[in-house]
Length: 165
Length: 356
Ligand code: HEM
Ligand code: FES
Image (cartoon, rainbow over all chains, first blue to last red; front, side):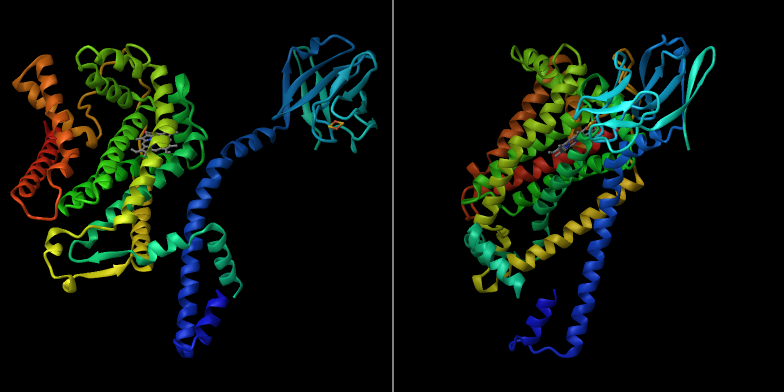
């Protein structure tokens, strides 16, 4: 728009006084302002409309605690997949009787990991990441961080998994 | 001056010189009826609103057995879904209203005469497609009203002798309106109709660019030196955009202040609600069916009403055949009277539809 002003100033066929220029500037600001208001007034509802399921799943992922009915009956040495908020998680009943719960989302690039009962490790098929099944520590492969651990409380009807804050 | 060079480059690369030359040469007649030239543009703009809001609705709409539930979610759960849906409905009505206004003003200005016949014929086809858009869209939410409106509407093809029932069954995907009907009306509404509509619209707009706006006979009668015009670009385009802005504000206001309602879910076993009637743009046919049904009861009355309507439509579409030239012949006056008669019948039966 600056270019146009220069054009007006240098165009000999339309000699313009400083008032003309400031009037022009004022009008331009007004038009730009109005356009911005319209873009906002249309863009905002459209964004919220398209973003609606994102908001819903953000709300769902804010979950702090999940109760898994009957999960207390999980056999020793096996694992069980469940949904924590919106993402997959693992509940493992180790051979030594201990219970561990952690996120099943690989810290490398987000694949879902798997409990390898034979090797007693957690592995990721995507790029060969390996995690410790007791602590979630990243042992080998590309994952940069341990899996997120959750608190586990076992009672005689269910298992309660809680986010560690 | 970077912007200028960019513009020149684009014009050269895209070969826009022709279009610019055409738009630069085009003028719009200025006289006391110039206002009516805006209605084609208004129709175009409200159609564009339909395309944009329709695509947005498609993000959440699910045809088939879940149709009602998905529109319920759009209306009550998705942020601003009620608004998008409301705009799609208000703008649909506005679109058809402006197409009618546009058509009648074209008729009264005698803008269908040589060389603009193709504009008239394509316009009629666009109107019919527009009505089909409205009819097919109306079923999509699958609430009580849309269910009965479609059920009744399907009786019209159904009444055609011999070939009618199989056509109605094919359109419905069954003997009754059901989830297959929604599924195929959806395909019609969002794929087939746009596919037919867009090229026809292109042709129609090309005709307008090519031949320009016709001046009404009262203007044609004046000396050429007495007639005034304005450049199409930028003057008329700027005014067009101004009108579009007003339309945008009007539709947004209506959509926000009077959100479109969603009725109870269609129940094939429930009785039709009291006072059920079609959308205003089908009201005239509805009233004629009712009125003629009072004089000639039963199927014969239905057939008579439909024949009358079809005949009227065919005659209306063929107007350029009867009134070809610029001269004010007896023929062309008869056509004018016929047209005014058609407009009066449509207006009065539409009005009656709401009161009888
Ligand atoms: C390419 C253009 C269009 C697309 C993609 C489109 C898409 C849709 C979709 C997905 C729905 C279902 C959602 C709902 O029922 O709320 C719908 C409904 C509807 N459409 Fe369109 N549409 C288009 C053009 C039109 C036009 C030109 C009209 C003009 C008459 C129209 C009239 C309607 C009506 C009356 C409904 C019912 C809305 C309701 O009650 O919720 N549509 N459309
Ligand atoms: S995503 Fe798991 S190792 Fe890459």
